Image (cartoon, rainbow, N blue to C red; front, side, top):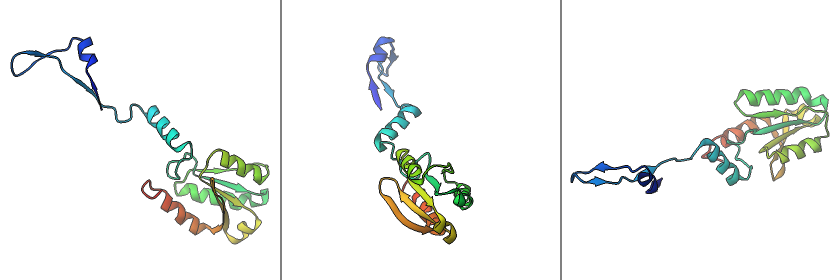
Length: 155
């Protein structure tokens, strides 16, 4: 909230008070965020682009190592999307190190690396932005982890 003494003077605003005298009003400006753009810029600056999981534009990158894992990786991506997560499925013919580096650069909170072993065992190799490899986890554990991170109060 901001109290404005200038605008009433500039526009020569007056009102008649209970005492039948003319008085100059005070204008109170109320704009909790100013504008949506300003609010977003404040969030971006506050988090330095490292948004918490629930707020990140892309929450998860699914990164198959080779084309042989594309089918399983796509199933993982589809399952996560069906549960409402914002997922990027990166099936480009690039080295996995490059895909991981790009995911880190884009500040995606989690990357799921899927190789032959993960595809055979129904798991994913979990990587957290800024922290690196967290090991292999079952898909059910992953869904449970994401469910706990999806609320602003738990992030």
